[in-house]
Each structure stands twice: as structure tokens, then as C-alpha cells.
Length: 605
Image 1 (cartoon, one colour):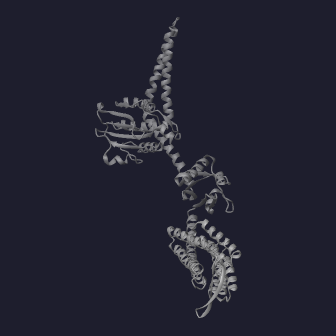
Image 2 (cartoon, one colour):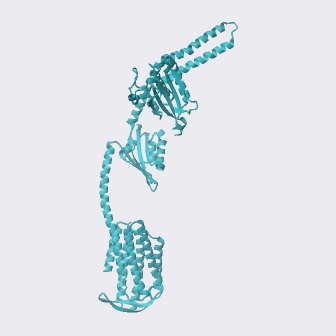
């Protein structure tokens, strides 16, 4: 019965291993059960042996399947529990193998130097044989190997318990129990000559039952996992279909980059955006070649930075597919880590060509509007500028007439003529500067940021409006320290902002007494390392309910205003990474402030 049970378990687990060659625990269990089947037949031979000679042959050859049984059991525990010290496993196998030498070469077998007699005693309804003889001292080699096996299984069970797998730890403890039971029986029989039948197969069968339960429980768990996996696969397919439908509806490209094996998966939309066919192989170099040369390095650095530190990736770049039609793409992604090591990144890709074209068109219209605003301001300043130009032109005319009179003298005073010519050159340069400032303000140009001296920026604007301020009988007060750092910006557009704010201040002075007409311009370096420029006036001020609306397009507090000067000014300042806002002046009038980044800091960023 024991042999039949062992053989059945051996065949079942052998078939499991044949179906799945990676299940080494099932193969080792099959070998353990098969060796116990063979040992059971030798055990039956010993129980029925009628003479010492027959008993000697049976016990001697029984050590061969016992060796296989112990070795396969040790390796089963090592693989199934995935714990235990390897040197103990090898020690068990080596010692048990060496025990075969004295088994065949010393005494009658490993257990007895000599079997003197065989006693027949009743057991379970029939007579069985029990040997009586002299113990073989070499028997200690085999029993030490069994003791090491017990130590190994105990160590592995403790390790598994600490790991949190209580089920496998209890399985190891059960194997340990049956093994100790068998070793105790051997000690009583062979060392103390206690009259006990040799029936190792019964505790061994209990051990095999525990091992089979563990493996069958794993099979049951695997079956449950298969059911769950099938359900999860069905849900995953449904989720994938929904995601694919959503991606196709929104023209969204999806990509996954496997960093360990350097492979890229992309859906059909993502491939189409780069100009790749469905069958074409994807790699990083191929994708980078499709990216515009001016954007390529920034994209590569963004990927590397996300993998090394940030984890998140976001960029906008141009691609030039094989058809030559350039398009703008935006990519958003995230890197996933295992044990602190980046293993894959996944993200989405979408076409933003229309948005970029709209942005470019908006920028162009803003430039047009800003240009119109400058032309309008120049119209307001035309008379004052004409007066300012007339001054150097009149001086040039008078100096030229004086020089002509001096040259009519037979002995002209050349020193005086040189002085007159020097004055003519200075007046000509002053007129040229006025014309250059007007030409610069009237140009239609894009944002051209560069380091700008605040004092030069203010002095150029003041030179343009000073004559207009005098014509309005108003005072301009300037408080700009020479120690201010340079700011980063477009000189012409910043001049437009200052001109607009100063002219608004001068317009607000209408209706006030001459002595109170003051526009003050100041600048300072604030704590955030930006330069703050302030334009305040002593005019009528801005009502509180209208203070938040002054930057709305087409909103104006002037009877003949267009309502575009302040919105344009705010757009210009925000394009310079600054901020423009308005405040009510407690002493009367209004205050406008705007900030500009320091040039050195901007370059560092």
C-alpha cells in the first residue's frame, strides 16, 4: 500500500514536470517518491527475511535508494522553499554518498558488522523479522548526513518563516518532524538493539503526503491565478480597446520605451506622426533623425534628465518626416523605476501644429498692434519732436551763416571757424539722434532681447518726451541710480512701454494747476533680483472700481483714448518675464510699476 501510494505520487508529479520543464520541485518530488517506492520493497524483503544472510543482503542494497531519497529530499527543500544554505545540501549529499563505501566494504553492511540472528515476532497479524547483531561504527557517517539534513531543513524553514511565508515554513517543519521520527527509530534499533520492526516507509509516507499537499496547494493556487489572469486579460483587452478608441478619436500617439533592452513600442498614430510605417523598426537614433536639427539636442537632454533625476518628461519640438512636411509635436511622459533603476518610460504624443501656427499668427498681430501703438504715440509727439529737431537745425543754419560771414574776411579767424564747425557737428548729431529714436520706434520688429542699461533706456525716452512735457507746462522728475544692473529686454519695446506710461501720466495732468503737474520716474533693485521701474503722476488718478480694468483691451478713462496702450504694454512686459500693475496714489494720481529680470541672472538660467 505504501509503495503504491509513493508510485502514484511519483508518476503524477513526473507528468507535471514533463508538461512544464521549469517545475523542478515536481521532478525532485517524483524522484523522492520513486526512491521510497524502491526502498519499500527492500523494507518488505527485510521484514520477511528468514535468515541473517537474506536480511544482510536486503539492508545492504536498501542504502542505495535511501541515498537517492535523502539527496532528492534535500534538493526539493532547497528549490521549493528557496532557502537554506547550499553548503549544507552538498554536505548531506557527499556524506551520504561516502557512506556507501563502508556499506559495501566493511562488516556485512553499513549498520551491522555482523547479524547474529533474526527473531520472528508477530506484527499486524503476521510474523516479521527483527535483526540481532553487532552495530557497525561506520554507521555514524550515514546518520551524521541525516542529522545535517535535519539542520538544513530547520534553517530553511526559519528563513522562510522570517520572510513571511508561514505556509511553506510549516511544510518544512512537518518534513522535519517525520525526519526526526525516522532518525529516532534508527537510533533505537541499531545502537540500542531495541526490538522494533524496520518500517521507515510509514514516516516517509507522512513526509511525502506533506510535500504532495504543498505542491497540490500550489497547483490549486496556480489554477486560481490562471482564472484571475484570464479575467484580468479580458479586462485588459477591454481597457486597451477603450484606450485605443480614445487615442484614435483624439489623434493621440502612445509610446513605451523599455530602457533595459532599448526597445520602443508605439501605436499607429504615434508612428504616423513621425512618419514611420507600422512594420518599421523603432529606435532612439531613428526617432532623433526625424526631429528638427535645432530641437534635437534639447529633446535628447530632456530624455536624459528625466531618466537620471526628474522622472517626468515634457517637451515641444518639430519633426520633419520623410514627406518633408514639417509639423510641431508635444510629448508628455514619465519614467518608471524598480529598485532605484529606471526600467521604462511611457507617454503620449500629439500634434500641435495648428496651435503653433495660431501662436505665430497671434505674435505677428501683437507686433502689428504694437507697431500701430508706436506710430500713434509718434503722432502725439510729432509737434514736440519737430520742435526738438528744429532747434539743432536752426542752430546749424545760424552757425553756417556766421561761418560764411567769417570766411568773407580776407584774413578769417580760423580758430573761430573751427569752433563754429564743431558746433554744427554737435547740432547735426543731436538732430540725427532724434531721428534715429523716431525711426527705431516706428520699426516693425520682433522681440530682440539683450542686456540694456536702465539709465540709457530712461534717458532716451525722456529725451523724446521732454519737449512735450515742457509744452504742457509739466515737470518730469527722474530718480534712476547709475548703479542699477542691466536688464534683459528689447530696447525698442521697453521704450514703447515707458513712453506709453509717461504720456498717460502727462494726459492725466490736464485740469490740475501748473504747480502740481508732476510725472515722476524712478527705478530700484528689489529683493528678488529684478529691477522695478515706477511711473507716478499727480493727476486725477484712477477710480477704485476701474483700477482692475485698466489693462482690459479697449477700456480707457480718456475721452479720446483707444484702450490699447496699457494692454499692449502688459503683453510686452509679460513677454519679458516681468509684471506690470497699477496702484492708486494716496497723495493723488496713479502709480504704474513694472519689473524686468536682471540680465546676468537671465543668462545663467
